[in-house]
Every structure is written in C-alpha cells, then in structure tokens.
Length: 171
Image (cartoon, rainbow, N blue to C red; front, side):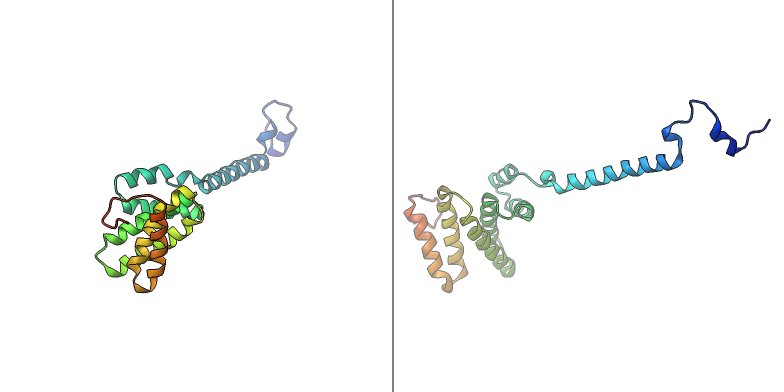
C-alpha cells in the first residue's frame, strides 16, 4: 500500500516534533542569525578595538610620537573629552611640528597641538596644567608675533608653578 504525502500528517509517530515543520525551523534560524548580527554590532560599538591609554604612554616613552598622535586621534573619536588623551595628542603634535621639514605639514601639527592642549587645559587636574602651559606657551611662541601675548601668558603660568624644564627654553 502506497502512502501519499497528504496522509503522512496523520501518522502517530514520535518523529514529528515542534521543530520538524519548515516555518518553525526557518523562524528559528532567522532568530539565531539576527542575534549574531546584533551581537557583532554591539561588540564593534564598544571601545575594545581602541588602543589603550597605557599604550599611548608606552609609545610616548619610546618617543614614537607619530603613533601617539594617531592612536590618540582614534581614542578622541570615541571619547572627545578625555583630558589626558587630549594632552598627549597635543604634546605629540608639538614634537611632530618640531621635527617637520614641510612647512605646511608643520603648521598643521602646530595648530592641532594648540587646539588639543587648549581643550585639555579645561579637562585635567591643576597639577597637570603647568606641563600643558609650558608646551602651549612654546607652541604659541612658534605661531608668531600675533600670539606673543598668549605665549607669555602660558609661559608665565608654567614659571610661576615652580616646575623647571630641561630643554633650552628654560624659564
């Protein structure tokens, strides 16, 4: 006796379960795929793919200013108000300015350094401000005649803080 497909649905065997119907299986697969998709999106949104601040300090200690500048920029894209990262980017930008041979690129680094240091000024503790003031004063001095008042303001702040620096620009 030959059985037709329409007659199979009336069989009383244990082989037919909840997940044996095609729409339920398709729905289950779609739910799993959607969960994976949204899970991957959530992981990509986290800061786990950003360089760490400790890696910035490690690059700073090895004088790898290009890496500090680039990685600090990546971090600032996600956390634009991080004062220590802004300060490191400003310091690295100033050192990249000093080492540049191309005047256009040098001015870009100098302006970026000033911008980062000015933003960092309002987001760091008072104990960190003298270092920022010193480099900011030097950067304004490099900007030229029209920035002399700002250069003096920040260099005076650094001198009055009591810190002494070991470069030719001693105060």
